[in-house]
Amino acid sequence: MTWMQWYNSLEKPSWTPEPSTIGLIWRILYPIILVTFCFVFVQAFRKKVPSKVALPFGINLVANLLFTPIQFGLRNLPLAAVDILIVWGTILWMVAAVWKHYRWVAVAQLPYFVWVSIATLLQLSITWSNW
Image (cartoon, rainbow, N blue to C red):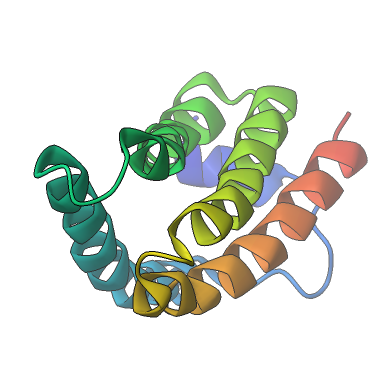
């Protein structure tokens, strides 16, 4: 069974976005993530901000990149739910860590936070419905 057949076979809430919509949202968010994360990593490398400011960005990046292989490769819904909770929580941590240094970076995370909040609710719902 392909990953798409598997995903389509899962019980999902009625408000689940179409896969094409999810893809479009990520295509909008990834440039924001790229610019802001790179900026923070460069500033930390140049010692313009403490490395602890970049830490939640690094954890978020790893957790974000792991979600797809966990969800669609391993097809492990509970682990994907834990992973997306880490993504969600580290966004809050990122905003708090960078706020006093670069508020524009913190504010730029708002669309990412909104989408990941929706995606987290969706993932938790799918996980619960297919347990």
